[in-house]
Structures are given as structure tokens and as C-alpha cells.
Image (cartoon, rainbow, N blue to C red; front, top):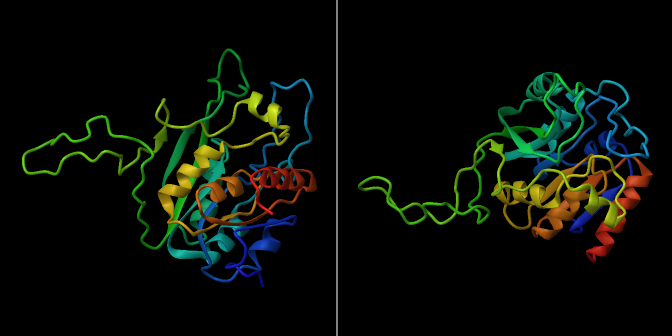
Length: 261
């Protein structure tokens, strides 16, 4: 069984269920993961097409994932799963049936991507993130977004508005929120080849909102290592895995640049 109190960053090249089934019950403080949606994703804006992500070529059930996530997550903690607008209904039910109390999802701004119908569909510029909790969960205080009316007393007898937001909307759009995806130029500059890389700043915001320093963050579909990078930069510990050796090595290179052994 894996020691969830070991090194600050533990990353393995293996299947997600292999890792999850080795973790002790209630050993993880937060789960942030981006599993395959089962939609055979291809980025239409690149001249060189990449291989479909492992597990994405056919429908992907979140049932086993949800059950194992619920088991390893501590009571009073939260979990986030990226999904797509077309797969959200199925994945929401599968994760909810695993024991999680499902909350309103986070809808966040990503770099615009393809549209199936140039003249009859809206262009996709949002990520859908399922949000579930185990037991009573509360957000942490953060210094991520300043209140525009800080110091003002809204009504007689109430406390002044704090400097930083203590409650966040479920829709993260606008200049005060980071994009959930990175700009293609950033990926090209750094030699990152994963087709759905998330923004480390965005993921770090979720980590800071939901955990205290030293908490253990789990990502069992680590891709190129964004969640590991975010956890490390936020002063948290990380454990995770990636099935594809190519992206596992890419994640290791990113961590090496940060000085993570």
C-alpha cells in the first residue's frame, strides 16, 4: 500500500485504478483530476494532429473512479473532476452515485476551441468541472480576488466588506479570474505536447480555496503534470499517476525544472 505521508511529490506511470486501490481509506485532502471524457478529442487548430488520449476513444464511465475517489478522500474534503458539456449529465450521475454530495459545477473560461457547426453552434470557450464533497466541507480564506467595495459597510450594524473575496461565484469568467487552459504559445515555448493542458495558476486557485498548507492533493489522470506543479507551488503535497509514458515523462521534466526530484 502506498504511503500517503511520504515525499512531497509522488508521480507514477500506471493506470488510475492501480494507484487508487493502493491508497489507504481517507488519506487524501483534495482531488483535482481531468479524466478522459470519451469523446475522441482532437484539437482542430493544430496542423499536426496528435494521438487521441488513452481512454478517450470510447465512452468512459466515472463510476469506478467515483467510488475509489470517495473511499480515499477524507471526510470534510472536496473533489473536482473535469468533464464536458455533452458528458456532464452521465458523469454527474455516476459520481453522485458513488457517495459524493454533488454541488453546483464550476464553469470557467478556457481558450476558445472548436465548434461542430461554424454557423449554427456557439464556439466552445468554457470548461465544466464537477464539484463534489464528502461530509461537511468549507472553503478556506484566501487572498486570490480583492473585493471592489472593500472597507464599505453595506448595511447598518454589519461588518465592513473584507479586502478579499470570501465567497466565489460558480462561473469564473472575466479579468479577475485565470483561464482554465493555457495559451498554445506557452505550450509551444515550453515543449509541452499534451492536447488539453490546464493552467497551473487556475488549478492552484482551487487548491488554495479548498486546502491548508501541507495537504495531500490527488490527480490520477496527471497528464503533463499541471496539478503536481500547482500543488508544489502552493506548498501542498501531491500524489498521482499518468498512464501514457510520453506524458508521464513530460510531467517529470516539468517537475525537474521546478527542482522537484
